[in-house]
Amino acid sequence: MKENLQERCGKSNMSEKVLILRKVKNPKISVIIPTLNEEKNIEECLLSIKNQNFEKPYEIIVSDSNSKDKTVEIAKNHANKIVVSRKRGIGYGRNLGAKYAEGRILVFVDADTRLNFDTISKLYEEFTQDKELVGLTSIVLPYPISISNLFLFSFYNVFVKTSILLKKPQIPGLFCAYRRDIFEKVNGFDESLKVLEDYDLSERISKYGKIKILENTFVYTSTRRIEKWGRLKSIGLYLYLYSLYFIGVKDYLKKFKLYKPIR
Image (tube, rainbow, N blue to C red):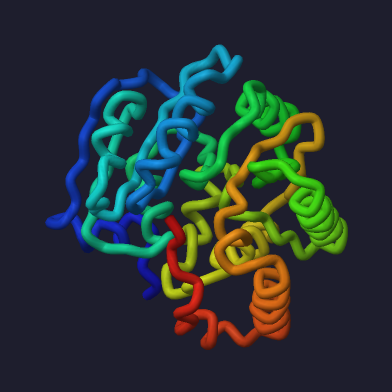
C-alpha cells in the first residue's frame, strides 16, 4: 500500500528536531520555507512574510536541512516553528514543513524569494471566494532587476499562464499555495525527483480542482542560478529538462545531478 505523507516524513523522526518558538492559535495559513545554508537570504525572505497586511493568524515554518551557517540562528528571530533534519532534498524539506503545519492553506516560499506586502491577503481572498480552487502561484519578478532579467521572467510568466490555460499547470515551487487536505491527498511533493518536483505536484493536484495565477500581486526571486550558469546555459538546460518531463522521462529526473544548490 502506498504510504501517505505523514508516514513518509515520520520515518526520519529520530533525526528531526522541532522548535516551537511562537505558538499561533488556529492559523489560517502556514508558510513553509525550506532552507540549506541560506544565511544570505533567509532574513529578507522572512521579513517579507512577516510584514504582510494580512490580518488573520498565520504561521511561518522554516524546514532546515541541517545548515552549517547561521540560517537557523537568524530564523529563530522571525519564524514560529523550525524543523531541522539531516535529510536533504527540496521535496523532502517542503513535505517535512507541511507535516508540522496547522493552517488549511499551505504556502511554499523559497528562501531567496520575497513576497509583496499583500501577497498572502490576495491568495487567501482567492481561496476563500473560489471553493473549487486547489492551488495557485503569482507573477514572479527578478531581483536584481535588469532589462534582460525582466525579459526572461516575462517569458516565464507567460509560460505559466499558458500551462494553466492548457490544463497542464506548471507551478513554480519558489512560490505556490495549496489546500492542505488536497496536498495530503496526493502525498505532497515527489521526493524522488531531483528537479521539476514542483511542476509534477501542480499537475497531479490539478485533477482535484482549479489552479490559478495571481496577477494582482507578485513575488521577487533571486536570479543567482542564472548569474552562476549564464543565461544561455540556463535557458538551454531548463528547456532540456522540461522536454524530458513533458514526454514523461521521469526516471532521468530522479538521477539528475547538475541542479545543485547555489549559495
